[in-house]
Amino acid sequence: MTSAAASPTPSPGPQPARPSSLGPPETAARAPDSFGSPAAQPDEPALFLHCVVRAEHQLPSPPPLGVGEPAQPVRLLRAGPVAAVASPVTGLAVVGEQEAQRHLDLLVELLDGGPLLPLRLGSVAPDEEAVREEVLTPAAEELLARLDALDGLVEVHVDVDEDAMTAVRAAVDDDPRLAAAVSAGGPGPDDIDARVALGERVAEAVVARRERQADALLARLRPAALADAGRGRMGGPEDPVLRWAFLVRRDDEPEQHDLRHFDQAVEQVRREHPELVIEYVGPLPAFHFTTGYEPAGAGGAAETSRWGW
Picture 1 (cartoon, one colour):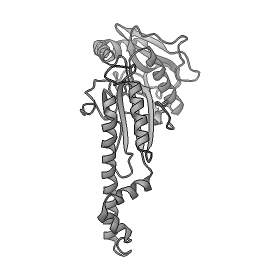
Picture 2 (picture 1 turned 180 degrees about the vertical axis):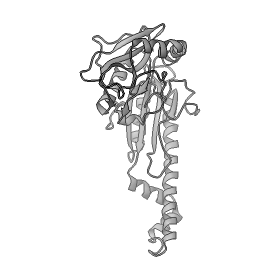
Picture 3 (picture 1 turned 90 degrees about the vertical axis):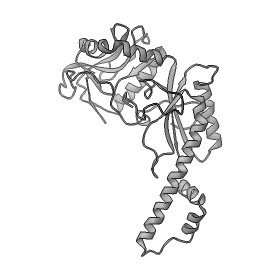
Picture 4 (picture 1 turned 60 degrees about the vertical axis):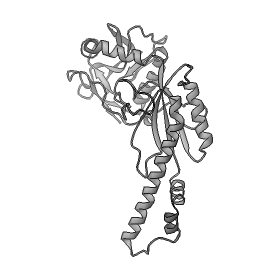
């Protein structure tokens, strides 16, 4: 299996996802190198692989369209207790924004039928036999165990940022000595080293403030989630306050680790922090928790998704 090249406003409840909102593609489960590349064989028919599901997974009726032009209905390729969802394609040399969005939309649609394990965006196989013999059959029991562990669970994303100048002013105001140095105009224009040092102090103050903000936000959101994981770079002066994935139950549960209660937690955070821009996306397949998870805050989940987002 190979990969072709891969080139929300606040409101109650999570918003539909865009590929760009999910983070950069990461290494996913791979099949042997015998799988063909669409770029190497542009005129040959192939199968674009979307995800792995249980063998009894029911596709919507009629089956949704996959990727490619013209797009064809997806199909289930079963092998024992599991199956792959695939799109027949011909001549798909590059996976662009349109294909990425369709792939994501399809995964979200399929999630209604049960748990799934997303495959890396652009995963392509030459034929059904290769999918069954080289992807599904060798790992069928492990894949089924992962699917069972994710039954009834969904992932949601919370992205938090703040206007840069607002963040700088607030960080400086939090430190009286730094505020005094800045308000005094800083070192003279010829004292380059001192001016650089003052700029570094301001940047460090911004980072420290964002770390405190992230810790406070996670403390408010983690109680409503089963597990959580970072989704990308944070901690720099130009990085967002928070870029995080949370695992919740789709249906209500007594422990309140479910989508409805997480919705309420996000809305409460928005009310408490009007200075922050908070984007909330989902429900999504559990991209960041496909190999298991530990309780929220335990730090056991990977920081990036193994499955392509």
